[in-house]
Structure formats: structure tokens, C-alpha cells
Image (cartoon, rainbow, N blue to C red; front, side, top):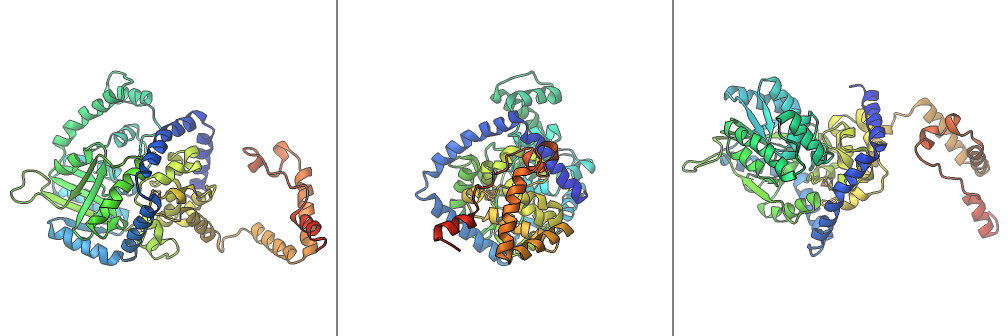
Length: 466
Ligand code: SF4
């Protein structure tokens, strides 16, 4: 898609949702309960900030020695009987899964939540190959029925209330209307139960990959990922290279931390570790276990020492929850797999800086994301780094002239003072309404009134002269 189109689509979608007060009210309401329970559970840590420091250091160690830890993980994973496919691109990852399904005569696929699968657009590729896929996570299933992408990293259907979900089930599944969330869950569960039993392939994501043991860890609240991984005869898991953690004991910190930061829970309901396919004498589990480890430009981000820590992300979604931009424009406006502040940092790396630089500009730089991130990623400064990198050597002719004029005036105190007075006067006297040259700004927000006296004038009066 052309650059102008991508940013124009973002602007259009963002303006529309920002003006939708019902939507904004619903998102704020949905996040209120999260905020309270998150605060309560954070308080249970002796020192939440020290826990963040520790988590950040573990991820630093893993990401800065990724070559070693990935090798160690792969050795152990394969020793347990699993098969690894290293995918450089999304296309390679998709092709591997589709070919595997075809070679094994797979007829249907059940899938639990995986942002990596979203990133590589796996579902459309499987469906194009004639393989129906059903999402087993309730939120994912709802957005799948609506033909939408997930709205949020953790809460894919958070933009919908129970009435909308009831109407959707009525239309797509022929169920009776109901306001009862439990009944709605049961309706979806009835559909899925049959899919678990008939699917030949189960696809999952992976929250962490433990180098020391070659295990992947999956965290969930519904128990659907367990069934997805255990019932079909083939289990395929997908993850980015950054999911590695060095030791099994590191999970003792990351599992509760992911639950608290992501969903305000002390611990997620189901935390499972997968070591490999079913072994001789075991009564359940898949016959084959494949793990697709995806690069897809992550190694380029790894090579960027300034922004490498963006790979520490554990996809908890906390930075989205506190971000005033996300809360106004909503998850779909971003047009990417990874929404919110961390999405605005990494998408330009994964999909091209010039095409996606507008996301880094769509930030108030308030720093709430950095403050909340459990692994202490310097998110809002990375937005500034992206802005700087996008602007370097890319100024328009009028920006170039403007900066030169400013540099020339700034070197002469007299000219600078004159420029300041002139700009203040021009701001006061400018036409208002549609002829206002600042209309792009003033149509949706107030413009600050210039101070009655410049800093220069104040300084002179204070010091009794220049
Ligand atoms: S950047 Fe931090 S807060 Fe945001 S999703 Fe990743 S780990 Fe969570």
C-alpha cells in the first residue's frame, strides 16, 4: 500500500473513533476494573519496581546473547523430539505451515491466540489452501466471526459489549439472544468442542521459550490453548526469536508479572509448559510438535543498539491500557498487528520506517507507557528515535528553508527578538475560522495564547539589563 494511503487511513480511522464518545466511554469503562485490580496486585510485590528491574535485566541478558540462547533452546527442544523451522520472513513461516498441513492430509485446524500468527497472516493463507481454521480463544473467535483483526494484544474483543456479541452469535450461529456473559461463553464453547475433536492440527503461540530446558510456556485464562495443543495429532507453535528466556526459574518472575501487568491478575489461570510430542507410554499429546521461530526483520532491530530493548517486550499490553492515544483512537486504527505504544515503536522496524513513521508521531510523549512497562522498555524515547530517524535527510524544501532561516535568526539576538515579537503579533492578528492558517491544529484543539511578555523581556527586567 502506498505510504500516503497508510497514513491517511490511520488519520481517517483515528479521527472517526476519537469523535465517537460511546466507543471512548466503553474503552475507559472496560479498563477501569483492570486498573484497580492491577494496582492491588502490584502492591503484593515487595517492590514492583525492583521486580521490573529484574525482569528487564533477564530480558537484556537473553536479547543481548540471543545467538547463544537460541542455539541452546533449539538443541534442547529437538532433543525432546520437536522439530524447529527457522523462518526469515512471514512468507516462509506461512508456507511451512501450509505445506506441513497439506503433506499430512490435514482437513481442519484449531488455533489459540498467537500474535505471531496474526503478524504473518496465517489464517488467510490456510483458508486459501482450503483449510478451515477456528479460533479457540473466545475473544479471538468473536473477532474472527466479525472478520476483524484483534483490537488489543491481550483483549482482542474489548471494543464489543455483550449486546453486540449476542447479536453476532444470533446472526452467525443462530443462537437465541442473551445478555448473560456465561451463556454467551457456553454458546461459543459448544461450537468449539466439536472442532477440538475433529481438527487434525492445533496452532498456538508461545509466551516464553526456556533455553535451559527447550520448553515453551503458554499462558491463558480459558484452557483453550491446552486443548488446542493436546488434542489434534499435530501441534504447531509460532514465536518470534525474542521470546527466549535463559532459565526455567525466570518464569517464577515472568508468569506472575505478565498476569499482573497484562490483566491485573495475580496469576493467569492456566500456565503450561510444553516439552515435545507424545512420548512412548504417554496417553495423550500430539504425535508431532513443530515450532516455527520467526525473524521477520527482528534481527534488524537487534542490530540497532539504541532500540534493541524493544525486543524485551513480553506482549502484556499494559502500555496500550495506559496510553491516551490508544484509548482514543482504538486498536484497529493502527492498521498493524501490534497496536499502541509498543506497536508504534516496532512496526516501523518490522514493516518499513517511511511507511509507518506516522505511528511514532501519534503520541503525546507523556511517558505513561514507559512508566508502566514491566520490563522497563524506554518506549516513548524510542518513538522519538523513530521520528528522528524518519526525518533524517528527508526534509521537504520548505522545511529546509524554514530551518535555515531559523538558524540564521537564532544566531543574531536582535533578529531573534524581532522574530519573537513578530510571531506573537502574527498569532494574535491571524484570521480565525476556515481562513486560520493554523486550522489543522485549531479545528480540534485550542492553541496556546502567547505569553504577554517574552522570556527575554522577563530576564532583562529581572537582571536589570541584558
Ligand atoms: S512494551 Fe512493555 S508494557 Fe508494552 S506490551 Fe511490551 S512489555 Fe507490555
